[in-house]
Length: 206
Image (cartoon, rainbow, N blue to C red; front, side):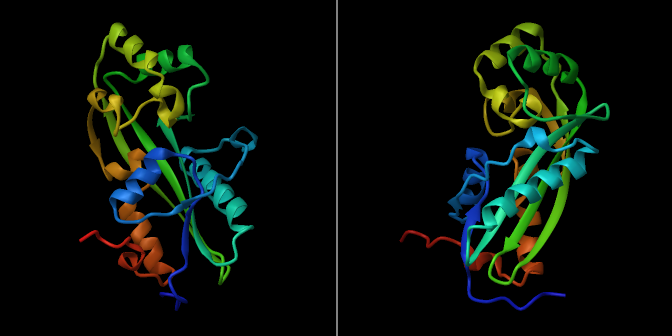
């Protein structure tokens, strides 16, 4: 049941991820960015979906605490491979090891989403999962990719919207979720909170 909403509030992204911001902007939204400062290492790792969801909630709550009238979006992503939860690599050697394990195989990218309406003090949390199939690349390709530095800054040590796209042979599910924020899921969450997605669109230049 949709909860009646007030006027369209400010939109805040509680994430430092440029990919998430670019995805929202491409979808017509232009949120403010407020980084949460949550210590991800302090959160106990359980299953991948619950872990991503917990981090998303912590980020959204941390930012929402200082906002009086806003819709705050918190997100976090992890890759699940062989039952192991993989966030960002700790260093280049870790990234190389990841890719040697991932190549020619499939993993599941989990992204937790939390949306908080600070005015009414209501919130929703949802997780999405997308299966990712990795190309069978050789050691030289892995070394060249890791040397770019890109894999060190993203969950699972790969991107779908950067240099890593050439090494992803296919996905099953929402591609936005792999980038770090599921736009279709977010629209449904807005709707459940009583907000109309297109009312958050930025004006279209004429």
